[in-house]
Amino acid sequence: MKHGIAGLALLTALMAGPLAAQAPADLANLTLPTAEKLLLENNRDIAMARSALLQARADVITAGQKPNPQLGLLTQNINRSRGIGSGSLRDKSIDSIVALSQTFERGDKAGLRVATASLLSAAAGADLNDSARVQLLALRAAYFDVLAAQERLLVAQDTVQLSARTLAAATQRLRAGDLSGADVARIGVDDARARNDAVAVAADVGRARVALALLIAAEADATAIRAVSPWPAQDAGFNTPAIEELLARRPDIRAAATRVAAADRARDLARALRSRDVTVNLQFEHYPVSETNPGGSGNSMGLGFSVPLFLRHSNEGEIARAQADWYAARDALQQVRGIARAELLRVRGDLDAARERRLRFETELLPRAIQSSSAAEFAFRNGALGVMDLLDARRILKAIQAEAAGARADFAKALAAWQASTEAAPLLAGTGDDAEPGKESQK
Image (cartoon, rainbow, N blue to C red; front, side, top):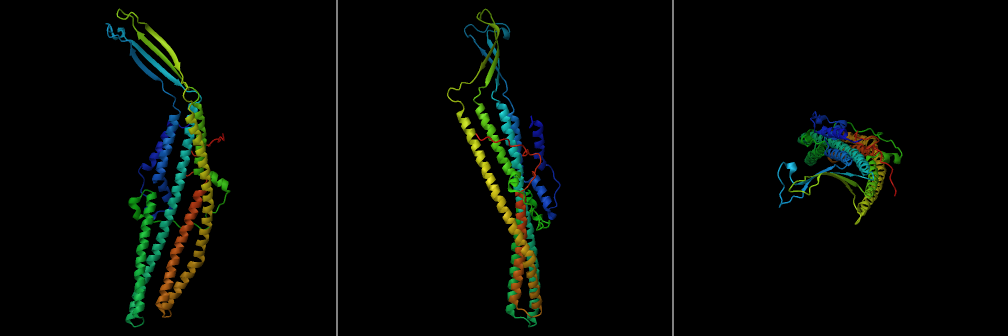
């Protein structure tokens, strides 16, 4: 059998792999490839999909099992008035029957069961790959959220340090009579706001780390996480294969298509129920002849068979249900295809827009804001600029730096979504999702 005990044992080992002792990852210097490796090893949703695949492989073994023979033992014709006689147990006046029965399936039911279960196992393998695809997308988005939050925290900390130095210098100028008390108060308010903003951004970093830790099952060490991978290049991930080719690669579509084929085999199996199974019975009877049992027949054998009589029904309900299941599987396939097609169009549009937005921030807005802020700082130090203008320049720079970090994160997440939607190869090997779905019947 294609999916036998050896295959089940191999999958069991694959499933048990994430539970084995793993070397602790350096979460304080967590790269994106390392995070992806931890996800595939430890993510709970992927583990559940592995369990579903393990169950489906076990169903293939069950589907191939033919009916076991039945052994029966019966005693009868025990006469209470005359007793059972004397002598050994074999000579007692008891009619003893040993019967053996075996059901022989007709209509290739076993083959159809195995074909259906094998296709469902392949669909479960595609589900596992799709679960990995979805979880990898979530991981990359969470990783880039951490990276962006860390950048915003650095900006906030730099702003706090700059505000503290400005407040100290302004206090000295106030003592020297070079700056008014109102201007110093404004700088003090801005310093307090900067410290509050830094606390809020630090909380954002903590939340982003927890979200990432949940995906890699490292919640206990969430505070130690620090993302260190660089942002993706702006020209990365812009391959544009034909949309039909992209759709054919997706594991969710392959899973749905395979379930249509499985439902088609299940229809054939339901129709095969009209083929009558034959049960053959063989029995040996021992009924000794004695003075108390002159009517005994001694040793005898018998042979018989039985078949079901389709008098009240011919399994019309099972056949109708299998037909309805096929319709449902076909409709689900069309729905998955439609959603995937719309997702590809949306994700590509998001990627183009995010790339353009990031490029504008890094080539225009951010350099100009840095230049404007530097000029304002120089002018203020030399008494050529008022406090309010200085604070406005700082706020603008801070806002643009935070928005630039967000634009990088948006581009990175849009790129991750595009890659997840166009992944060509299965993410997990040996899952069975490369099985041919088979020809879809249109009957």
